[in-house]
Length: 306
Image 1 (cartoon, rainbow, N blue to C red):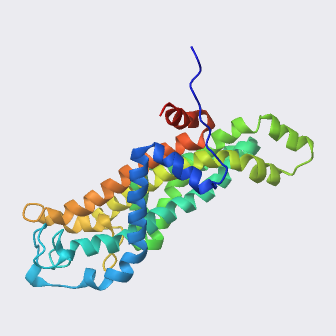
Image 2: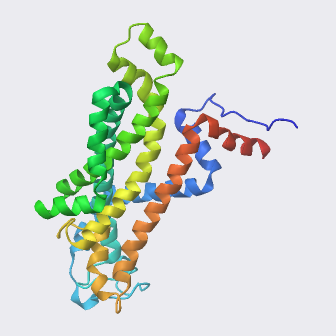
Image 3: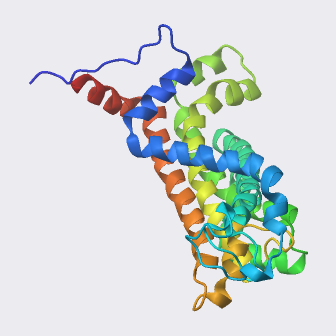
């Protein structure tokens, strides 16, 4: 049986960005997910600048206005909350805090956990043992419970929420990176670098870290979705972001008392959370395939068959 036809990604006349877009187009679900995430990111950047006043404007005449009506303007297409504020405007404005909290927490935990994982995997010995015990101590508390305890002691706020969520996710990156390093450090190119007198810092950050990055990036995409859900849960419990700041989770919490009469108050921000979470998971799966040379041939084989 003849081997499958593999069409390599053409690099002539294309940059890395065009190659990535070409591979993204091969996975239609990931392509749609990337578009959705780009729209959400754009809304998070420019939404508060354009719609901040509309999101705060109180209109008691439109209190709990039903969705799918343009009689009060397009901003009220998704309905209004208990104070007559536009749900669409508030969802767009709330996207900034939601994305900033989730993204900042994951970036912080990724950098700290990644560096500690490199050290724990490369050094082993008592240094690696101490770092692993610290990770085990943090992981012994569920993320939500740890966040509840810390935020109950300290005042809830954006900085405290980001910090506690980042700390709770550090062990995930630490243990994942350590497992990768334990295997990579035995490869020939690492042995060669050591034999040539490369310092530990150079071996870690020049030779090993680039090999670990694909796994870390894939994990980060999943963790953003998880952290977003945890933050929504904290806001729902009333110990996350406090008014006048707003997040999707806080909007769900505000609407829970009106589920019987105005379901849309919690439904639409809940849909936003669900869609972004699903999109991140689908895009993470695509990143795993594309950054792994062993799996990338699947896209190329499909293209060759067409």
